[in-house]
Length: 137
Image (tube, rainbow, N blue to C red; front, side, top):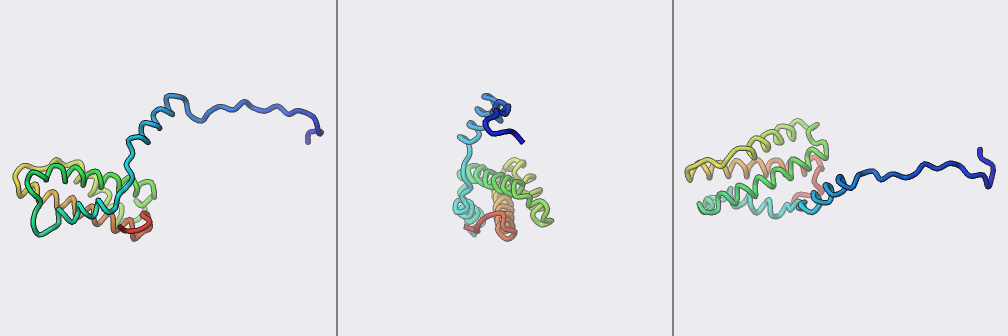
């Protein structure tokens, strides 16, 4: 024990990240988009509707669904949802479908969009069921 009034040596404080690392964190935060469950469900409804989306909308819908899937996968990984067997299978399917290019031909593209929609919906539901998402939108 140190006597009162006696100075103890204190280590000098060093920041946890360098300036370059802080810049990287800042750039990632600026590029971050919050998960929007309502937008996900709107896009899923659009691609799973009885009436297929317009041909000129297929590429944009595919990109949005890929974005939704990657956000869901990131949420699942951060929440360690891969420990759940069903979630782990859905995550792998989501990764594979997201990596696949939109096929040529109207009906092949529509079929691919519907697969993206189904996996996004199923993964969203599973993450809500195992409480990785606060609530299903």
